[in-house]
Image 1 (cartoon, rainbow, N blue to C red):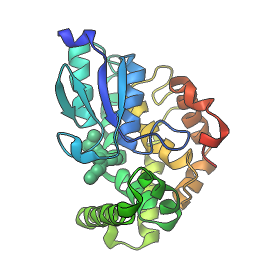
Image 2 (image 1 turned 120 degrees about the vertical axis):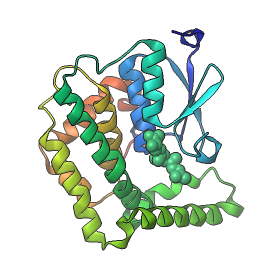
Image 3 (image 1 turned 135 degrees about the vertical axis):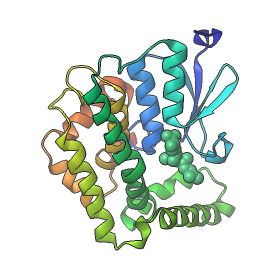
Length: 250
Ligand SMILES: N[C@@H](CCC(=O)N[C@@H](CS)C(=O)NCC(=O)O)C(=O)O
């Protein structure tokens, strides 16, 4: 343990949108994990990932040290706070959690970037992320960010496929994840673990926002899927669940 346990950490993340912890799966994951672990934090909202040590959000400041990447942050907090929501998992559950994480973070996150930031049905809503940018440069900033995302998804590979192929690959990710998920209340049963933070991060942005896509339709048709996301939100973010109707997803 270090002196840093006395200080609430600072959590730098995108401002909230819709009635979910965060539109970014990674920001939602980390804030959910902090609440599962019961670690105090203060939010610093920033729209600009370039401020982070790895030029991505989220990142934290703990005892004047800035740390980026959700998995590295979680490992750091487990080590320095002596708190581990995964302590009770067996070897097979740990392996399952890693495979789910890789599926959602190393593949589905790119599909979600496509549905939310490039497809018309997503851009309609996510363009509002740029409302804080001065009007005179707003359009320029929006198009610069879109170009960066197109470049990222092209290099990663998914943007070389047709729309329906990208969408189908996202549905397949979720079919696999749902096949290994328990009936609840949490991913592995009665207690929340780190994988619940990862699943909520990817699920909330897909099913609890008004951004339409066939992936959202698929997930909303699966029994228990929306109920899981709503249950997680209610348990860990009661203040969002009871937010005024104008702040909620349409
Ligand atoms: N592996 C990183 C991924 C974080 C990440 O990709 N964040 C996105 C937002 S969801 C970001 O900041 N993107 C900005 C950019 O790529 O320029 C983590 O776990 O924190």
